[in-house]
Amino acid sequence: MNTKLVILIFLICSFFICFISCNKNEHYQNTSEITFGSFGSPVYLKAETVDLDAPLMKPRRVIQIDSFLFAQNVQTEFFVDRYNMNTLKKTGEYITFGGGPDELLWLHKIQQKDSSTWFFDSQKRTFTQYGVRDLCEKDTFTFQQKVRIEDPFSDVLALPDNRFVATILSSQHKRLTFYDAKGKMIETTGDFPSFGKEFTKIETLEGYVCEMVLSSDIKKIILFYKQTDLVEVYDVSGHLIKRIHGPEHFFPDVKEQSYGEKTKVSASPNESRDAYFCPAIVGEEIFVLYSGKLYNPDQPSYLLNQLFVFDKNGNPQKRFELSEPIFTFTVDPVKHIIYGLTDNPEFRILKYSY
Image (cartoon, rainbow, N blue to C red):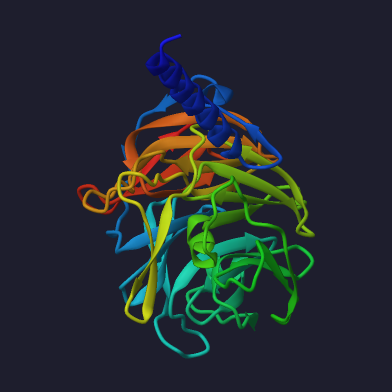
């Protein structure tokens, strides 16, 4: 046989062996895969603009509690504005910026838990509890209790047994860290996902940043990842139940770089992709925005028009296609209305009936 032909065949075989071998390594352990088809055909939803009696300020999140919608603001005098969605009137504004006991530095998110709500301040590292009725009905009120932890967190949840669970921004912590009712660390547990590529400790923290929700049966903690289309389901003791990868099966692409004495981790432009954002419990289901878009720092694509629905166990149920993209949302499960926020061409609340 011709020597050149033999070499060519050898090179082709080597390429395919390498290709197959590399791709075998690129998968998460203990993972089931889903596709767009797992959600069924998309359901198209048409937007309506909600005409409130007072303009929105600079909201970054919204949450529906009873018939009231609470908008979390940034760079405004008050962190929270309250709107009655039956009358579409603004009925209150609460909590100022500052270091005082009734003030916040950065409102990360609000979580309703039974008859209470928890305000999580990622700058102070404090968890502040307010009564739901106070929040919805009163013009002024004070907190019921305040808890502080020592560790910086990227997300946190209040659990039903007076514990807290957080994803901590420290290489000394594992995937989930649990705290008692007074903010003392109980344990850190669970492994970060791995697909065969080695990351530095800082790259791991950045590449696997996620948002958490507590399932409606309060038995599961569900993690939705932002830079890989991965969903993880844990029990409330921190044991991994399963991983779900998809619908497009991509992985984090981040790089650590040094600038003198400083270190920075950033997503790779036009290589890294955005995944899941703003998960919300809606009855027995979980609604979450999905992107799938390539990261482009010159043209950020934070407005999204795909809304996925999972059941409380992380199984895909359905997906909505929104006529106008949004960057966050909340849901009224009684009226079957999705309220989404957009800033195009200005801050507005969009209403989707489903």
